[in-house]
Image (tube, one colour):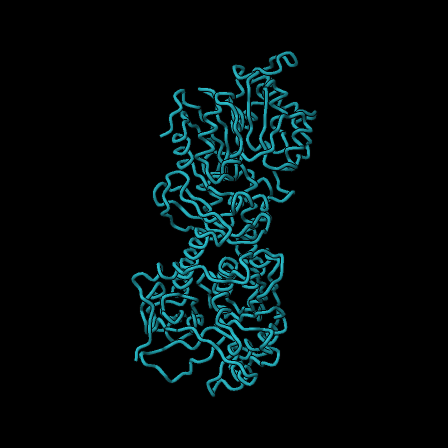
Amino acid sequence: MRPNVLKSDNILMKINSVPEMKVETKDNGFGGEVILTVVIVNFNSVEFILESLRAIERLTVSKWKMVICDNGSSHDDFVRLRNGVSRYQNVTLLARTQTEFGSYGHGEALNVLARHIDTRYGAILDADCLPLMFGWDSFLISKLDGEVKIAGTPVAHNTPGDSKRDRSFPLMFLCLFDAEAVRIDDIDFRPRSITAGEDTGWRMRETIEKQGYKGFCLVGQNTRTYRQGPLAATICDEYYTDASCERLICAHFGRGSNPRSGKYKTGAVSHADDKGKWLDACASIIDREIEVAIRSGRLALDYNACPSCGSEESDKEFIAPDWLFNTPGFWNVVKCRTCGLRRTNPHPKMEAIGEYYPDNYGPYQVSAAGGSSGGGIRARLREQTLRQHFGYFRERFPASLLWRLITKPFVRMFRVNLLPILSEDFQHRKLLEIGCSHGERLAYLKHLGWEVQGVEFSELAAEKARARGIDCKIARIEDCDFQDATYDAVIMSMVLEHLADPVATLTRVAEWLRPGGTLLLSVPNFDGVEARLFGQYAYTLQVPTHLTHFDPRTLTALLVKTGFSDVRILSQGFHRDLKAGLQTYLLDHPHSPGRHLLHAPQIFFRLAGILFGRLGISSRISVSAIRSVRNETS
């Protein structure tokens, strides 16, 4: 009799309409009692392991920890794995060298890992097996009782009516067990005889049944025979469901993980293509599970539509971790199919976003110069530039052709940041800076005669601004309520990308500006050369704190939409992002030919930054826009 298979027409609907299950805990923080230890062996499988870690982090409802044993992988594979797990306090990475290979070596590593399972439950996860259901752990835990002490994946069906292989006890693709009842230290995970049909962990059944316990098996199918469901496009995969075959619990790439497998020798499909298809399919299922869990309130993240056009249709560009501060998590960067605006989705809840801004966050720090209005050569050059080109400090410095020629190259510095408000007509006007940090810019503008006010999210940075004599409000911009038509200029330097709803913010800023007032802002440029070269490694990406990722076209459309006109964009000649992006890329690719560029003289990166700025493709852009006299949003 042909076994049940996944229904392909509405499989995702059925997978993700599972009612909320009874679980031991929904809090997946690091505090409290950890009840589940997940163990994995890695051998040159870093792509699988990192996706497993993402799945465990987002889909597991029990408090968990993970122990990974690297079994002698290549240097590059191990380096990528180490970088990926280093941001997790609850993940331990062990390293060993195999004395045996294949299933024997795998079994040796599991014998090591078994000694690290010291929680109520343990789970063994094959490197190329991924949990695909939110609450997979509580589902398997719910199958354990007085007799059943282990639940998980059996041998999958190879052909219709295949009954030669016993499927009454789980194998270790994914199995969860009661570690207080099962004496896992008594199990030798090495096979006694591969020629006799044994594989890694074959003696687990023998040991557990001797202890008087039984196992529970999911329903397993094989895509080499059954072409149904979201994984049908892969040649080599086993997928596992509940008894109804309507809830997809996990999937196993199986023998497809071996690039020397016979099925790849025909040339019909390559191992890399098949693995890529499988990982992409599983990632899409995991993303959908995360979305449903967020929308149902079971996962403490936010899932947003496009802030510009409201569309929920998007394409994932890549998954990136927090390379800047190494906080836990992997974050999707998606591109709206309607307007092209990119965003981080899902992202942390705004009330929790402060956890991703450490006290040593760069903009919170006072510069080494200690302020902009002090002495020194830089201050003299700045003041002479303002005098000779913008009419400031007439009482202090005379007009001078020599100084005008000397300071002409420095005019661009003001063009990037402040040129639209430096004319004499703007002197003694009122200005607001949103995200003023420690107030260095406001202190200098105050020195120039402006009446200034600041808003800052960080209490630490705001106190530094107040120490400079700046009127600084400690608040999120979403919570501010200034009087309409109050300011002649508003500055938002590297702020807009941090906001979940830039449309609402820009609309309010337009209301706070007087008609004809000027908005100055700067943002990273996602169409710049750094983002194009380095993708998820780009220094300016900075997920999850950067929630929206702009380029000149999408930013201009957003400004026009929110009541601004005369939008002018200038590409900054910023060079440090290039080197920082390269350094981050080399963390995962230490043998890349690009490593030689790190030894290039600093002038190389400076000249490259200037060139890309002149070409309009640098990593950051500055924008000025005028509040329309008739401030009507479309």
